[in-house]
Image 1 (cartoon, rainbow, N blue to C red):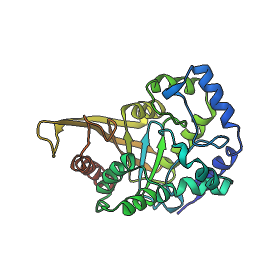
Image 2 (spheres, rainbow, N blue to C red):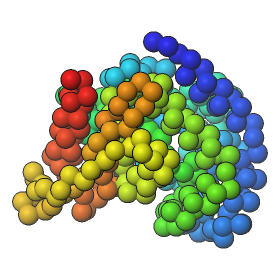
Image 3 (cartoon, rainbow, N blue to C red):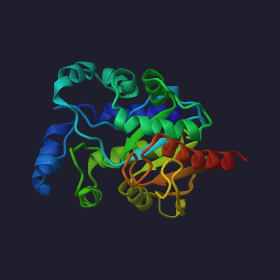
Amino acid sequence: MDTTWIRELRRLHEANYHCDWTSHLRDLNRRYDLGGRDELAIPDEGLPPSWFVGDVEALDPGRWVLVVSLNQANWAKKDQAWRRQERDSIRGDWDFWRLLNQKTWYGTFYSPMVRVGAVALGEEVPGEREQQQEFATTRMVFVESCPYSSPQFARGGEILARLVAEQDRGLKVLDRVRHLLIEEAHPALVLINGNPALDRLQALEGERLHLEEHRRYESISKPGKRLRHYEGRLDSRGGSVPVLAFPFVPGRKTHQSHREQEQLGAYGRALVGEALQ
């Protein structure tokens, strides 16, 4: 496998490790009038945002899934000392984000994505927590649309628009990371989790992103409940990449149950199969 893109990813990581992100976030929150649950943050004072989560060094082209969401939830302060110790060097920070899901697990978010991704790749859905952690680490990479975390993102569209207009350095790094992963690392499928994340990717990719709404269909586990998603492709240098986009999962009105998530994954599997043909 050509690892030029990994070297570029590491260069971006190293070039932004020692920047003053704490002051940058303080300035953004002041200018955007953000406080309380809307305040933007980074996982640890003095350290950079998360550019990706997943073992980018273990990816096998065409056999992994990229997940694009909106932004990370704030991190708990109780494990701050552990995080800072793990991230106290450029190499340590790189390995921290690569192997994060092996060390800690936020199942509410990651488990549904593992379920969708595994079915889409034609794999057995991991049943045990440790198996899910391993799948999320070695067969998936997670990136955000906004590089900064927050307890909520109610003003997400407005904030992203301002970050774009101001050419925010964190957003530029994140967009470059996502571009490298799609163009150079060759995912089998891109999952877009949430309508705001879809809006951001559409704004970035323009006519390269071709999506159509899959009209509402009935839930496999809850008769009468109607589900929906978008599906299509993203034109890239290495060919078209299948894309599956959906309202934020899990959610009461979207793919909430395990069977519904596997139902969504089956649509992804069909897209991947079509691409292989």
